[in-house]
Length: 348
Length: 280
Image (cartoon, rainbow over all chains, first blue to last red):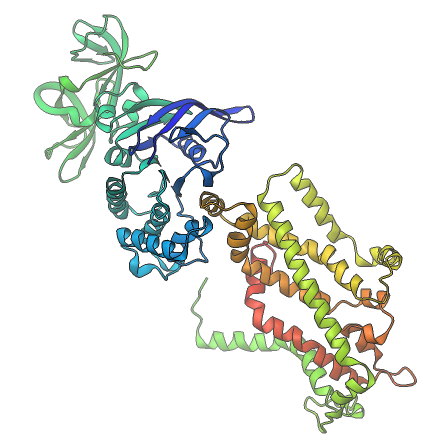
């Protein structure tokens, strides 16, 4: 186990800069998820920590040691790849013990470590099989087994669940989290799935366009997003945004005036943010015309027009109304977010 | 794509395939049956598909008229060395062109590929001069070195490069994280996975060397040093007439390794060439 520190890390391919000075401190034993849309640089950053990509500028420290110029094998990290990267011509046992074998481990030690890892991951009965004889979930477990068998200082996961079906993904999510709780190894996990990030992370790093937008605990990011991007990225369905001007009556937007508890200066151009689940039905609420209604069983998702704006609401009740009809909604005043319309930054 | 054909359609298809097979099978059949006929029966009219009289002494005479066992050994060991050498060089060169970034790699690869465009007839005289200077005429060195560093190796490098290009990057990256250096990645990960391509290279190279004709007749002059294709031309009577049945007996024995190689490894040959985008 070791802390990982990124200091002003940059990455360029020729004249194209893809990471613009990343600063992250990851504590010893922490589970940090890098999340962001495709192309935001999260995988590149992970590969730089692994040593699979060179670092253009800044420094990466693992366990207090600068590893910028070290080969992956000398960084004491283990990585789980998106496509598992199991060696097709080797059995599960050989795949798992391969790294130890090349680091001069004795046969007895390798066998013991492989058995230990296989026991943890429920792979004992599969040790003689080849990767092609395994299901997706089993391959994923073998990939994790290969990582833990070496007892590295840091685990790196590069979108490891993206090739699994939705049901298996939920199972494996729990297994990875359970493994981390059991072993306590510092973990950096990359995903574009914000649900994975929310459910697994001790802290989330939200990235966009090669920059860190916000670092924080999952619920901190959910409750207090630092800017419009984070507010829109974290949460599903996404937060509703309505642009308007702060007045004494609230935020005046096209066709609607929204209640505010915020003390933003009057006349400020701002973006009003409210999560779909923070809207409730209320007879004295704002009138909204239903355009689409999606009953989910436990909740109902409604797309509707409020003034000139299309918004989404998620209600914990069943709604008998049909598209074209009007319902009345009320935003939870304690869950309103306000962002500066020009900078996109949160207004407290 | 799997299609369900009616029994009648299947019968018709198999019938058509049998007819199409005739031009390919007939010469081999003719060679084998004629090798056990007396020479007068070979040209009998109408021709016989099955020998009327069997004369197995033709096979013994092959060894009496020529040092055929020695020539067989010459072809075998030359083909084996050429195959092994080509596999080593082409797999390493193919891997380098596919996976290692170095300046002008694509341009250099194109230059290497240009070697395929030069017919061996064009280079044979300069090569003769070179090997003459090195004192290697009437030795087997030219027959070993020219294919290993010549056109067959270029083609083999192309086959191996195409295979290694398709190998997932993540496998190599996993190996780097596991602690392997470049050569170990090549040796323990890439090469074992390249078996289909190596199989294709081995078959192609072996057959090319086994069937080599122009180079032996240029570089070799003593019957003890001859290889099989060259030896086959030597079964003539005192007047220069071909001793057909004996020659065909020798040809039959010459063809056996080729047939065996194809029967054993044709699947790998096709799989290997499939990776190149070429048809097998």
